[in-house]
Length: 171
Image (cartoon, rainbow, N blue to C red; front, side, top):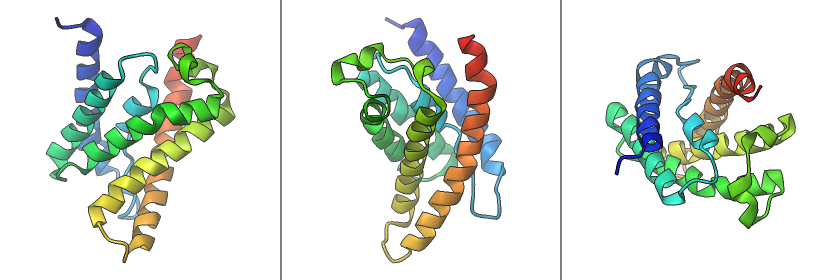
């Protein structure tokens, strides 16, 4: 049975892949930083939903970007890894217990909690992405530099989205 919410998530993933590949991949800053805004899906997906479905959607999101960028699965791996760690980070930042995660709402986050949630998630996603891309410790300084620049660039767009669209929806 096709659920309407599932269909909405598939359309959202297709939209995020489309704008990532055809818009944000063209916004290269200093030949090193690209904003990966598709991570918004992983950051903002509701916590009380089916975890297997969430990780499947994370895979589809990363795989969609991998198909267009011809990157061999590194975006899918990074999305699944960060998606798997997401509930633990939310519990740490918000102070909720394991059984309370189903009742958690992102609208309850303060500004500091948003910072403590998004910065490690984006940084870890980008680090996994670039480390697997290089697959070597010999150029770890370049991996960390790209991770830092791309994380800053991505976080600018994430916070821009949160300020413009999330606050309006919560009012």
